[in-house]
Image (cartoon, rainbow, N blue to C red; front, top):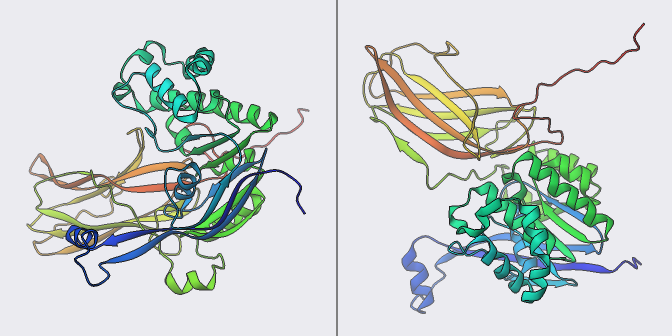
Length: 418
């Protein structure tokens, strides 16, 4: 019997969401006017058990939509579970979605007091910690400005400074550190190491498998709301890679529900779209090495970016393009059919073309945004027929991140000098 003290105990946890075909169905059910079931249930979590002991650093990994953020929100009390129980022994400080727990109209100082009060500190206790919080955040006089004026990097610096300096017994972090610059991330992970030495409990979700491998004592792997396993970082990272390429033996129930295994690809509801629409991008998606639609790929693995274009007019030489940006908006890479000399032909109105860009991705692990376009030249004038900016999210899963945006895949040889 394990005699360690339990910090977080999760038993049979389920979270179901009601999905309605139309808003009126939700209204009818709320008013008790519907004699039938007007919704479908989507389970974000299905019977998850998890025990986290005091002093452990636990990582939770899985593809988008696997339930990682949902379980953290239930543990912290942001969401209520549909079924099951959660018991927490210790004061929690959580850094979840960017902006959670902050009032956008308040300045930085006021938000420090707001967050500290919500966690249970008195004004005197917050006063005692204020200097440490402001020193860690290091955002200068911006602490006196409304946080709605902050950049995402400044925001996360202040949010993490508050979370880390109010002396929590349990720290919960959900991907938020990916927003800060590399120096601030290093500062945060140094604080993680201090926390571990002090015997604090840390639970964090990340796509950065190198951090998961370095800092975690144990890792939990989720997939489509089901806990597939838990174990050492190496064991679970290897299992995660198997999940991504469809080679992990899933539970029978999940296999029956998810044949063939494909991953939901979230489309940006606020994408920028424009053009003459003489050619229209009607469909777009990403596939992995096995040809399955996906939103997450392994660093160094092959993937394919697809788009289907319908032509409304004759176009002499259409150019098909894609661009990959990071979440800060920096263009990382991209190409088009003119640069690649892949397609320089006229297309007639009514034609439909399927374009597939296949490549090996050596981007660093993290979140990226994919943009697509169809352009061309009419005489000497450049024309945009259809552009979709930031239309799809693409997650790159990595267990080795080097400096910068792209891995040079250096081969290192060290010999004794003669």
